[in-house]
Length: 66
Image 1: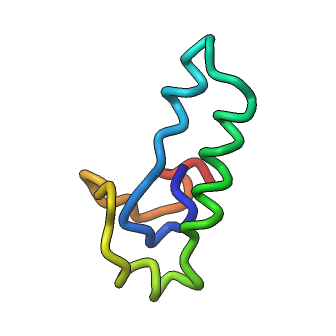
Image 2: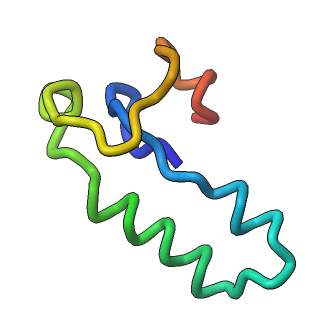
């Protein structure tokens, strides 16, 4: 989950979705965390230090699933 085009980090949603034992609550927790981490705007997102840096730059919404 990448909550902003300009964000420098992402949260892994594929692992809980692929894990048959993952509860709906586990998946919901990833979305809550993404929402909690969302920057005020793109300027703040670009300046924020990354906890899990993205390995490459994505320049358009279609590249991040938007």
